Amino acid sequence: MTEIAESPLPRTLPSTYLEAAIRGGLRCTCPRCGQAPLFRKWLKPVDFCYACGQDWTLQRADDFPPYISILITGHLMAPLLILLVLDFHLSILATSAIALPLAAGIMLGILQPAKGAVIAAQWWLGLVGFRKERLPQEPKA
Image 1 (tube, rainbow, N blue to C red):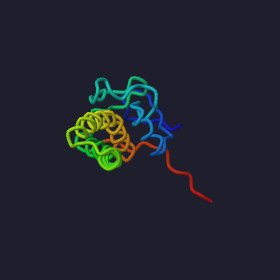
Image 2 (cartoon, rainbow, N blue to C red; image 1 turned 120 degrees about the horizontal axis):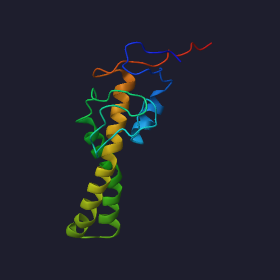
Image 3 (cartoon, rainbow, N blue to C red; image 1 turned 45 degrees about the vertical axis):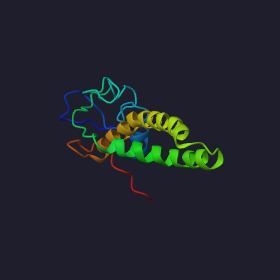
Image 4 (cartoon, rainbow, N blue to C red; image 1 turned 60 degrees about the horizontal axis):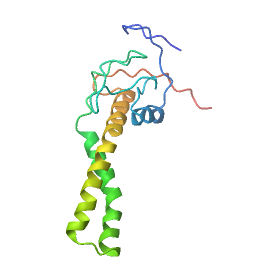
């Protein structure tokens, strides 16, 4: 692997594809090395990866992860709400008592992996101050 000269720690270029980086972000692990945790608190990323030394202070994944979380939650909840109202004939109060806590739980459960995936995409694409540090793609014959 190729060495990066300006890095404070000796590192090698990752041979990570975008899908693998996002998968690591969804698992809340470092998308660069896949070994160390990406978060030190629920939504607070670590400053540096403990395994590979990647600087995560550059990330700006503040607003987009909640949009992703709400979008996925809405798509999961819509069929359930239709089922509760039309098939079980529940009242609005009973439907709300079931749907609101469930929607809040789903949304909060999706939020950290969504933030990890957005951070991984920012890193892999070289956005918001991250340097593109992937190996060049081999030409297809």
